[in-house]
Every structure is written in structure tokens, then in C-alpha cells.
Image (cartoon, rainbow, N blue to C red; front, side):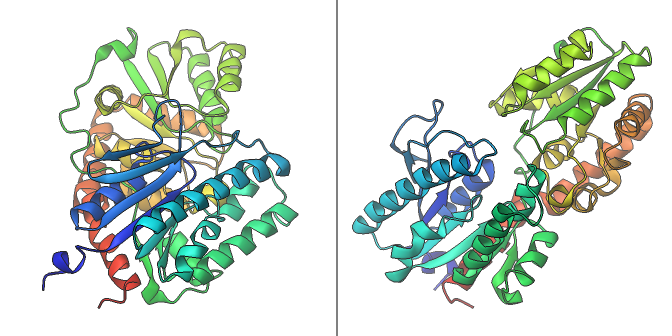
Length: 404
């Protein structure tokens, strides 16, 4: 019997709290890959104005959405409200799905490390738990301003440890996260699988540059990503101010994305006098339009702050830049260097002036840009693209189900 036919009747329930699907690209790629391998996939996620339907079937995947609570600010009370609503809503939906269908695998995606609570009744009924480790929550709390040894950080560490203890298998986004699973998670090596986050090889196929994004200037520097407190956009604004202050009116910056910090960042850009040389586009969900912006860019930036969280994290935006053959500038972070290799220049930690120097070095050297972009694109095509991750994803499922 083929592996495909062996999987044909297994049902999977994926729980994700952070973003809805299909907007959460990693989770959606996992769900589609599992469906193509003949798993029956159900996903529970939050509802948003863009994805308002409570239930729908997309590409053969059953999606159930709940109304989330208000997005948490930095207070413990706000986290408690947001996550309580998420856990209760997901638990009720999970039980509703289980009443109709036997579930073989519950696949939980953090943050937060609370979703095991929703899975407990299903585990008691025989399901196996896969922990898809997207963010190191203790380090994430510190990056958001919490004291390293504070009560909330210690609680996050306990919840992470408990999640690992309940998991049959864990899926990690990179080698640094695998070390967490083996270390403080106490997982056995054979139960830990690295499935990197990366775009599919053909995601931006056919993307064409559009010089309107240059706004009449010779060079374009691009950023794509979330704009939260830990994403380093202040460093990029400071670098842009440095570049403009050197009299470089030939460089346009386009910043694509949304997040809690956008209003403050827009106000700060105005205070710095950046004017029309720095453009905030807001969220762009169209791959065609996003691909066009990245295809137009001469240089792409990942300004994530050098801290314990970002040092061990793989940045999706770097993968997207490389997929389109764009050279990258970032601070020197462990996993950032592992991802990009020679496709990136590395600025001194949290130094906006050095970030500006690296940007201008690439802006002014077309041959270097071309060489680095080609190296990055080759890395993506050979071993970093999503297609290269699917065998590990399926191997993790085989392991969770007790298959050799």
C-alpha cells in the first residue's frame, strides 16, 4: 500500500490563534500540502473583516472561524482577555468538529502556548498532538519589553514546557528552535522535525517591476512585513533619515505592511522630515502587487532588532526577498545569516548609521546587487523553498501516527 493511500482517511485539526487562514501563509501552505497528501484537513482560526465567514471550504480545506477578542496591548489583563476568548472559542469549535468526525492529529500553532488546552479533550479521545513552534514565547515577551526573569516570562516558559510535554512530535522553523525543543522542551531528537517557513518556488513567478513605485527617483529600497514593536522599523526610519541627510534625494523607500506601530511610525517619519521619500503602503495582500514592488526594489531591508528573540528567528520577509533575487541588508543575526548567507550585507547590531552605509553600498554597486541577488535566488530554489520543506512535514506526521 502506498504512503498516499495509507494517509487517505486520517483527519487533521489545525488550531491557529495569531492570524486567519489563508492569510497565515505558513499554516495555509501546511494545510494545502497535507490535503495534497490525502489528509482531511480542518482549520480553526480567528475571524477578521477581510475573512468574515464563520465557516467555508477553500481548496478542500474546512475552515472554521471565531470572533476574537480585542488585540492585547502589553498589559497582563489584556493578554488574559484576548487569550481566554481564543481558548474558549477554539475549544468549543474543536469539540463540535470532533462530535462529527474522529480526529487523528491535532496540530497547534503558537503563539500563544495555550492551545494545548483546546486539544486536551481530543487527546483524551485518542488524537495525537503536533506542536508547530512558530515563536519562542519567553523571548518574544522580553522583546516586547518584559523583564527577562519577570512573572509573565516565567509563565510563558512553563506553558512552553508543558506544551512540549504533551506533544507527540514538534515541528520547528529552524535549527535554533530545534535546540529549544531538545533542550528546555525535553523532546527526543527523533520526534523533532525542522520545517522552515518559506514561499513556494513559484509564488512570485512572472512578477514584473513597475517604476511607479520609485516615485520618480533612481533607486528603490523596499521593506515588507509586520510593523510591531519588535520589528525594528525605527532603525530603518533612522537609516532613511541618515541617507536623506547625506543629500541622497535619489533613493525612495517603500514600506509595505500593517501592525500596531503604524500610526506611531508614520508620525515619527513626519517628525524626521522624511517627506515623500518614505512611503507607507499599508497592508498589500495581492501577490501580484507585492511581487511587483519587490521586483522593482534595488535593495530590500530586514531591520529586525538584534535581541534574543530575533537572533533565533527566521524572518519570512528575507525569504521573500531572496525568492525574487533581491540583495538583503539586515543586522547580523544568527538565523538571518543562516537564511541569507552571501545574499545579504550585515550591519552592526542595532546601528542605524551602519544600516544606512550597507544600504548605500548596495544602491551604488549594481554588480554587487546582481551577484548577491542571484546567490539568494539560487539558495531559495535549491533547499529553502516550501517544496523542499514538504517531505519533512509529512515525515513529522508519519512519526506522530507511529509510522516508520
